[in-house]
Image (tube, rainbow, N blue to C red):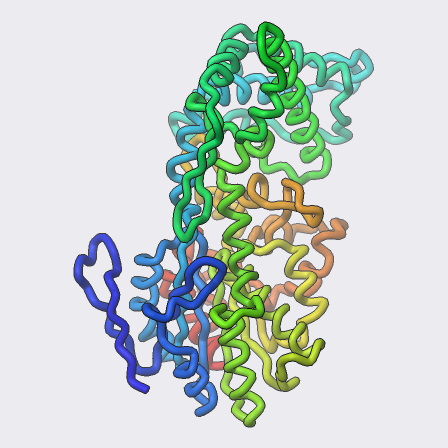
Length: 513
């Protein structure tokens, strides 16, 4: 069936219509992964292509991409995929994550209360790393003075990183109660910080919620003077009257002490991202998680799961049911799944759903019908990938991961000097949640650092590290002379689906080479 999809592709292309080949398909999904039938090709067209034996590539873009950009990507990549011999299916969705990262983080980093907490927690964290063995028994810290801390923080203006040369010492000990209490006392004794907190509590108002794309919450406010999570403000503002200020200050000091403990615990476990970025991450998780992107990230991941729910309008389920009907007739198209960033989370859910349907008997899937999988800077966790392998490894005929080497990853700064790390570092250190659902540091599959021998003994990485052999991982930029299918020149998170070498390598995978 010939198809032409015409849509406004947004700023910079006013009135432009995207004319797609009759062998390429755009799928636009709404809330919960629902198929937007007014903007999408029909699933029947995709299934007919598979039934005819035409190879299929399903392209799932990342979470920073809005609908207009997703459509432009589809238009740009269509010919590349057709030239590789496959009919592309572009799943277009939007998240609101970029909106949060651009606006909320900038506001948070400019808050006086955040800057004062950052200075104090950083001061005591560095003091702990500087601690000599003979000083530990004393239970106190020799911290850098305020002038030194201010000088280090000023390095950000020139693109530098505060205390970048401060290394994790061997035999680093846990934060002692007396050391934590020193920081808490410093917080309680800081008149400017106390005044900031009082202003925040005085400006409290009933919680307001702002929604972005498809109803995803992008902002929660409980005070006109801060973007601290309303739940945190409730925790601090437990009393009214004259005693409120004292109790709130004690609560703030206690939470800062907990941040110090978590920062040093991560340093001891070698899961820190450098002392300054780790302090920023832990402050955001403790005080600002929802407005730092936590709510959006959780909603995005849930949407990649909800699209496979038992409901008529869920695209993921419709696609798998349709492909199943084609496969049971004997059709054997080569199916390639390409997932960029959050698209890798989507692919994990797709593989898990195929395995579940086959195990529980509600969807047929022939044993020889397997997927080629390409991950581009995957934002899925090692733990989630391990669970998928446990149930669905047999569904993967070939897997190729393209991601940046760690030096290039670190250089790809997310929001400028205030957080000198990449998007994947930020997701790992701030936005992710542990298996218990609580906010936690979690390693991501696309972070090359976890391929280092230093992490060989970490249980959470074992299954993923074992499966991701050197043949399955291509670090970017690749060396000159790399063979076809293993070439990449991407130097930023967003550039993987634009880089000519990556696209050439994906085409090699699609062809089964």
